[in-house]
Image (cartoon, rainbow, N blue to C red; front, side, top):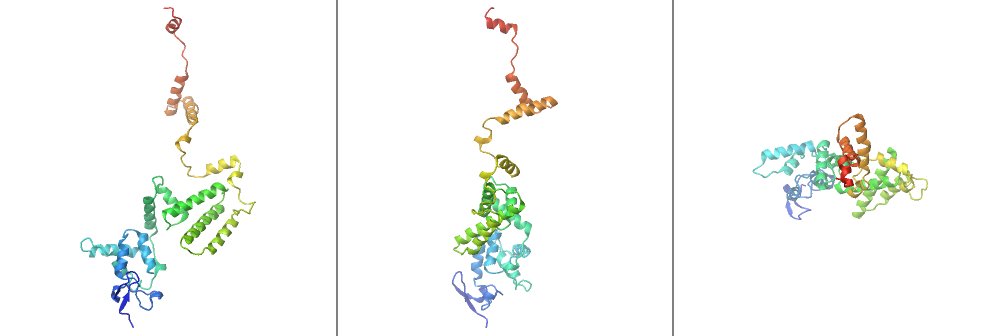
Length: 307
């Protein structure tokens, strides 16, 4: 027997069943309807109608699929049917995924447009980042750590990864993979603890990863700490890492060594080869300052005070 009235689990109001979207989820088997009314879903959607992650979160909570192509076509359909500035994109999309080809699909059947999703994620992360983060940096973070993370998660993961690689030798692809997995597991543990969830299995996974990479404190034969490395090994490590961060202004060139290299190496080399450039100009300027000219007769007379 069909249920004629339902109580919304969000607003708590008892309403007619037609105010609820149909659901084929086994968790809604008794009523055959989503437990949140249409009005509450619309209100939640309007909080951030341009935020794809927010929209996907709504569909995930009601166990309905997010299908990128249908979402884009629903936006166009809603524009054609709109009255003034009132667009019912969410309602149009729910109508479209309620058709026979999609009615039995749930969140696990979602389909994404990878390029569009990557571009959106990149722009969203750029908007949250400071001016020191470029679009290329964001793209590298997404490529290295994967899609779907918040900006704060990317920053935390990258900082932990850099901290590990600065403390321990990381000269192979396998070691890089293990350290990245360690960082991901640590982030998972951190988030689960914030939500009050158990982390026993995740801690075991972390211990296994630390053991595989010889990074446990009890493993004396494990990866050497940075303080145990020779100066040459550290130089090789720093030369192979990229990008090299810009130094603070006070450490940029405290002893002016770059000036001597440009003037007396590059400038002198340019002079030898007959090349006219900024280095040769700096070279001749410096030479003029250091050149002692032979005094003329007038200078000698003035210095002696004879005439």
